[in-house]
Image 1: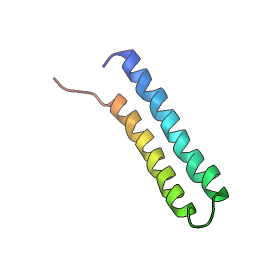
Image 2: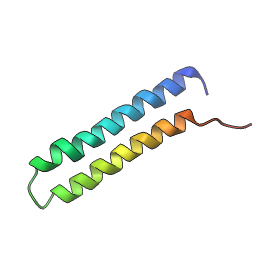
Image 3: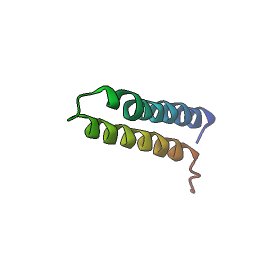
Length: 63
């Protein structure tokens, strides 16, 4: 994997993870009570997805 692709995974994954944390920790508490659990779960899953996206960029591929 080239350096630019690795950098893309790091930057993209970081932005995705931060967006998930922002949804779960900043946005969800200000929503109506019925929507809070769904927004919190969605934010946590998005944060996990960002970390997995970073992991895809650091993986060593065998030929």
